[in-house]
Image 1 (cartoon, rainbow, N blue to C red):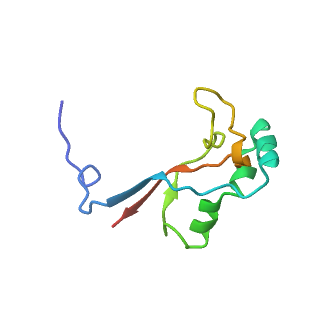
Image 2: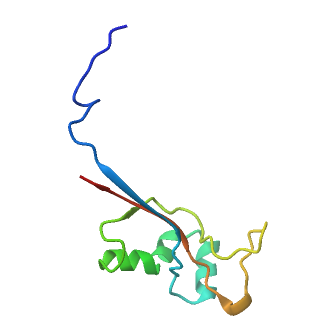
Image 3: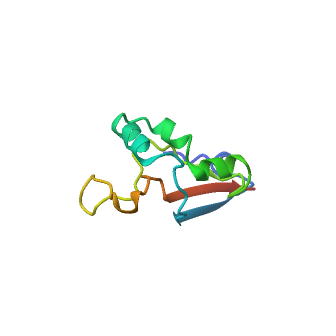
Length: 106
């Protein structure tokens, strides 16, 4: 086999990447019962329209220029351990608190 070197494989510029991950504690701003109805209907896009972090990023108030992978799953906060049942204590709204954001810099 023959080895071919191209600029595509060996770019002149290497991007730097920043990754932010953790429990950012942003919430979904809607009544808990409405959120649970949307979870049952698997309507993630409607839930995400009320997500605090997405709104903050869109308004350049947090993590400017950060991106996030596609969210196609129910909120992960706050399940009873080893179940798919949400805690009802304190009437917390199911939310996407644990997040991974990223951005590439030149």
